[in-house]
Figure 1 (cartoon, rainbow, N blue to C red):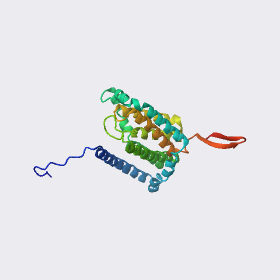
Figure 2 (figure 1 turned 180 degrees about the vertical axis):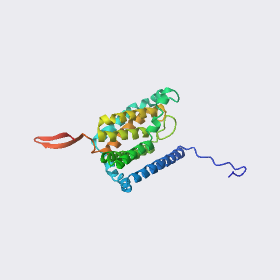
Figure 3 (figure 1 turned 135 degrees about the horizontal axis):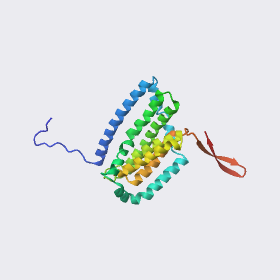
Length: 267
């Protein structure tokens, strides 16, 4: 339909909010398509699929509650301190590490896809589907925790992005913290909780790769990715609590003449 003569089409707003809203809608469409496909696979894999999907969300209140532990507070504190310490050098680091072309840009190009929340969520749900289809309780539990970790991390990360409203190195909005970094480290932390650090080590390395890629791509400052890593780790720890092969427990104990802190390792 052609516009009437002499009546120009209305201009689309260039405000950061409208741009961010459009990007969010596109992201929601991508998530919807991915989840529909994976859910259909889950329903085909198991007659109890509908119940299984619902069960993914039953532990979310406990997962959010598990965020508030001394260990997680220490991790967030370290992340905040590191982010604050590097903040004055953000601009100089961003200029030195950015690469729009060349070998460095090509090497880190995959980070934008690997760390994307849609990809991490699809990986998590895919692991859960494999566990259900193969009747492996351990893999199914891992997948469920991976899904929950992405939800917890997404709420925390997006909440901070809207609250802080920091501009990115490229001039766009919602830089702090890095969502790609937090999503990737959330996955690594869940795997750490389930299988230990030796299995999780490659996933932490992958998280470091994604973190660097966001700076090379001029999407984030160093302080964004440092705090994003801490946020992702505590999200993964909260979702995966209780599954580690070598759990560590710390508790107070009343002793003659005072109170002692007792730690123990258990299988």
